[in-house]
Amino acid sequence: MRALAALAALVLCVLPAAQAPPAAVSGGRYEDLVALFEEWRQFQKPRLEDGVPDYTARAMAEQRARLPELQRRLAAIDPRGWPVSRQVDWRLVRAEMNGLEFDHRVLRPWARHPGFYAVIVPDQSDTPSKEGPAFAGVLELWRHSFPLPAADVPSFRVRLQAIPRILEQARGNLVEDARDLWLLGIRTHKEQGDLLADLAGRLAPHHPELVPHVDRARQAEDAFRAWLESKLPEKRGPSGVGVANYDWQLRNVHLVPHTWQDEVTLMQRELGRALAHLALEEGKNRALPPLEPIATPEEWQRRLQDAVTEQMRFLREKRVVTVKDYMEPALRARVGGFVAPGERDFFAQVEAREPLLLRCHGYHWFDLARMEREPHPSPIRRGPLLYNIWDNRAEGLATAMEEMLASAGLFEGKPRSRELVYVMLAQRAARGLAGLRMHSNELSIQEAVRFAHEWTPYGWLKADGDLVWGEQGLYLAQPGYGTSYLTGKALIEGLLAERSRQLGAGFTLERFMDELSASGLIPVSMIRWEMTGLEDEARRLE
Image (cartoon, rainbow, N blue to C red; front, side, top):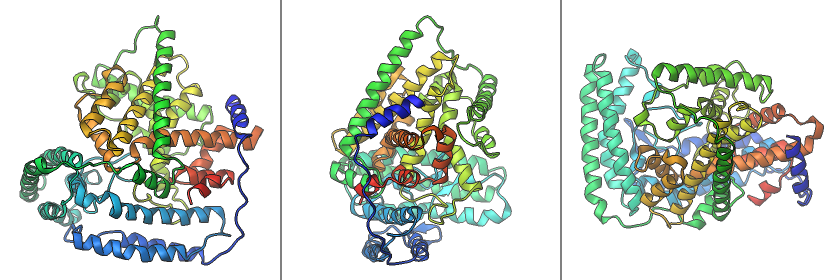
């Protein structure tokens, strides 16, 4: 760590000092910002009637026409002179409003992307909210246990009854030409039909009266998918947003101080670095036996639970972060079930050989537990930011923890496990590059899928598997998400270097991680401003 600090000092000493902040001028109170934030959060939701959100062209045109007034009101609240944390809150509200502007001006998922109308969400995300564009009327099955409590049955029935009407509205809304998003929508709605078939089986023993509603929803899904397939030959238009729009969203929504080209350079560098270090590790370990994958369900459960124990012990003993009582249960509860050898896609291949590595990425669950158990004092940061604005912090830190903990000694005595750190890094870089090339409209979705498969070591990312299609589909629907893992990782590593340089002998990893967590799930550029007092990046994002 001291070597890292020395390197940071050598690099950072040539950078210009942060500019002095402008003279304090305040045109409003923080309470005005909070009140506007609460009004904004209600405004951005579409009207909902009997479980059906209104995404019609008329409703969306009305929302777009009214948005500039909210943006003008926000601009009239001048946060200069406020404490930095409150200035950051103001920028977060502006970023969310920019997110809706970008939706209307560029993404228009309600008109371009059939997959936007995926109503059934089976599993909880490990991130603050759903990855990608968020449909307002989803039925989150993971929030329910069966049999349903009697009080939940009426609302569950309303959600099921809404599905055919949602899909009927979608036929009228989907008027734009984006071929790859259409292809993805066909896959998505096949999965939706399968999820409904499974739901019918889960409901039948306890709630047979709900099964006909599920059947009608599934019939509507099948008909909708057939309609999408019938229209596919007409679709020839691009689905990527283009480089200029990509840059605008990075800067104004996700508050990332990079461009599309910067991210291309970073992904290429990380892919080359990962593959080079993997080759070096393999060469060093060539005399060692290979990692044997887990073979049985019993061994799977034992080794994954042992990995949680080992990780928590390491975090405590090495004082990586202040360990709270909710952390271990949050991580232990997310140990997944056995995946048979023939069914293993990329992450299951890694997990079967070294369960500890994905427990590092499971820092996500600490974040979510902290959000619930220790809500942020700012009402603006208390819940998830909209439009995946949290992505470079949430995905960036989870990814950074893999290599950081390896460097801190987590895999001492496990040299073969270190190889997998670089396998994971290569996969993230390959899929990030593929996503960038889709948004510049250089690659089709099929080409992006093939690129990610071919550049992932050992052929572990199945060439036509649901995982690679799901990842590339998300990155096409949500510009910047596929790169957020490594862009966020790089920003966090840079912040660690700066903070180490600032604190000198007073720096500890535990202090750094606690400060990082205290800022909440917000963009790393804003955390940097709060933690270091340096506002050069924040100024570049103006």
